Length: 283
Image (cartoon, rainbow, N blue to C red; front, side):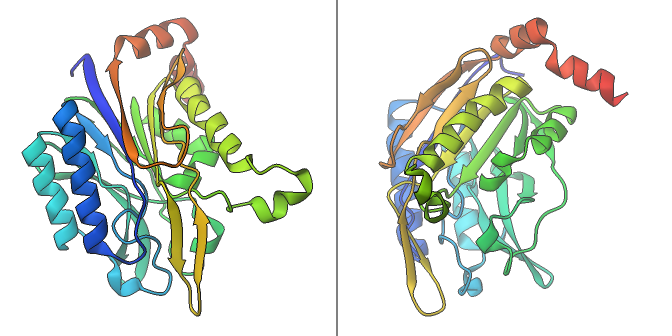
């Protein structure tokens, strides 16, 4: 397993229902990123190929669609691992918010179905039921998606399975809770939520945590109108001891990178012994 790796987050505005535009933008940002630094792992946002599709489920994606095939090719071309944000995938008669991890050989080596669905997703999506990890040359990797961030027990399950890197694609807007929070005059509530939990998840679980949110504006096609909001952005990379070490502090498009030294995890585990204590309690 490599001791030092370079990881990256791509934060991009997602065009509503426009697969071609989103794929072109993702490729452009990836090309620009690799023109500056070669990375071992790149994470894209949730719903990054289509945006949310509650009334357009015919746009569901899976391993056979050209969009996922494109990212398999890009992983080979750039010799990198790619967390394919998330897509809506149909399985039998159900639809799941699904993320894929593609390795540097272009193989899909991990698939995760979002367990904790955000409230508006629950009427048309089915929740996943289990977490998974995969061992790679750059670390043992697990995936969560967006609202999963609020549930620490998922992270505990991941580290019990051996995860030392957890990636979190997200589609988090400023309006997710703001209408109910107006009486508190707290317009930064969603930023506060994410910015508190991202470093906490890294520190309390002794992991490298990579949070990739969408940028710019959010648009979702509803039955009779288009819902609009702004993304919070706030994509960030977090580690034990230091907390947040790289961040896009607004919702602009772009990317961040971080050179991660695995000795940071080793030292954190030696000092705090969180994982050791969890395993003792488990047994």
